[in-house]
Image (tube, rainbow, N blue to C red; front, side):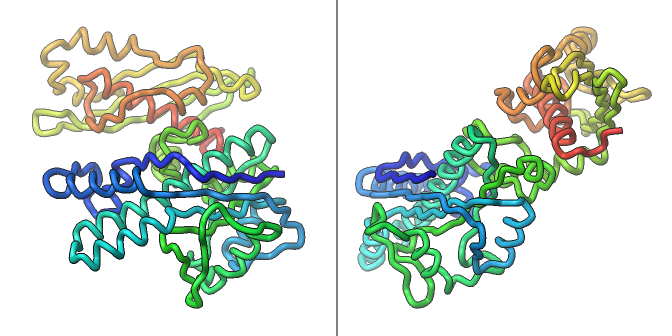
Length: 371
C-alpha cells in the first residue's frame, strides 16, 4: 500500500534546530569559533554524508506493539494501519566522529556529533511531512511517531521492531544493526512507528494525537499552527468567546492584552471581532474589526499614537487581513513573527491578527468555547 525508499534525501537542517541541539538559548546566533565549527560540520556532511530513509505500511489488525503508551494512542485514535520507518545519517558520520576524537579534536567531534542528531531529527520530520501528504489525499490522518527508548517502550525491543520493518526485504538502503543493549549502529539512526487512522475527527479533537502540535518542520503545508498548541488552547479558554448565529454564521470576540514599547511599558488592551460564514463553506471570513477595549488608555501611550495618533488608529481600523478568504488560510498566511506588544508597526499588527485568527481556528477545530 505504501513503501518509500530514499537514498539521497534532502538534508536542509534548520539553523535554529541545530543551535537548539547544541544547547544554546532560543534565537541564539552562532559567531566566531562556534560558527566556524558548525560550518565545518555542515560542509563535511554535505560532501561525505550518506543519509537514507525507509518506510512501509502495515495493517495493524490484531497486531500489538511493546509500548503501552503507543498502543493506547493507536486505540484512542481508532488506528487501522501504521507506517514502520527507519532513518539514518549513515555510517560515514560515525566514522568521522570517531576519527576526530582520536585526533584529539573534541570541539570538532562535538559539533559533528550534534549535527548528526539534527540530521536524524530532520529526516524523521520530513518523513512525517511526506506521510501527511500521502495520508491527506486518502482521507486519513497520521499520528505522532513513537520509538523504542521513549517512555513506556523499552529500548531492548529495538531488534523486534527492526525485524518487523525488514519483513520481506533483503536489505535496507543503508547498513543498520542493533547491539545487545538495544542501541542502533550507526548510532545516528532511528526506528519509528507512525499510526494511521481514518477517524480524522479524533485527531483534531485530541491535540496529543496531532503530529503538527510538536512538529518542527515549518515549511510543511500540513503544519497547523505557527505558535504552540498549548498557548492556543489557553487563549481559546481565557481570551476567546464564540457565538453561533441562527444562519450558521459565527461571531468571535478576542481580547488582546499587551504593553507599549516605550513609556515604561504601559498595559493596553484591544478587542477583536470576527464574523465567519458557516462550517460547510469553510468558515469564510466575512467581517473583521480591531479597536481599543472600552476604557483603555494604554493605546494613547504608544509612541506611534503620540507621533501620529489619527493615522495610526485609522490604519488599525482599516486593516482587515484575509477578509473574504477561508479561515484556514491563516495557516499559510506569510505574516511576520513579531514579538512587540504594541501596535505601532504594521508587522506587529499583522502578527496579532495571525494570533487571533489561529486561536479562532484552533477553537473551532477542537470545539472550544462555542456557544
